[in-house]
Image (cartoon, rainbow, N blue to C red; front, side, top):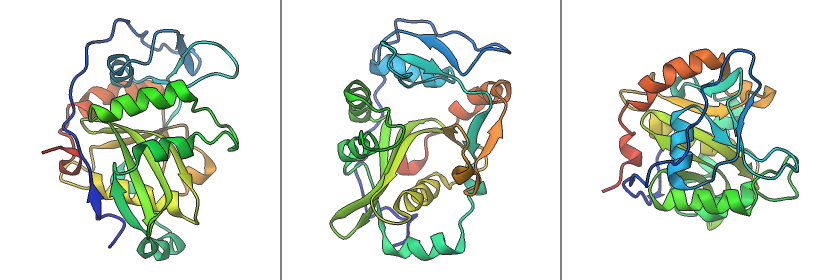
Length: 235
């Protein structure tokens, strides 16, 4: 089965949680990537943050929650994904599944032995709760009975906010990204956006570009207003 065709998919129709009790700031020119501190990680708070163009990530040993809005922002338009010849050859080695092992995916992404590991227990619990409400999803690359790699993120309308990815076998995380693009490839694909937070040289080879923060925030309402991809809509 190809990477764009989910073998198994466990989708829950998104349920809107109680609203956020906080008001997030509007990032202004000259403001750094870290734009707010504090609040909580309740589902309503997380969704309000993504809808405002922010996301949480611990900052070093600082206590509390840091909210980020990078400038520039790393983004990928699904139809702009670049698939190399070697990656194309890897696609047939894996099967893509959706939401069958969310907790295992986020745990693997948070492996403390990884360079730059930042996913702590608080983050893990928060996104598992968001997953149970139908907002957070894992895209998984399986090889037989082994979870070889994957990614997780939050889907709101036409936005897929990618949080982290991991691999245990060669190209498995990239195959999961190809699988995600397959899920987003419908009549709205050219208008959908995969937010990867920051561009890296590795992500640039896959088609990720940088967008000024102001442009990202201007575009965001139109992206959020799009319908969820059919593949991520529950029964």
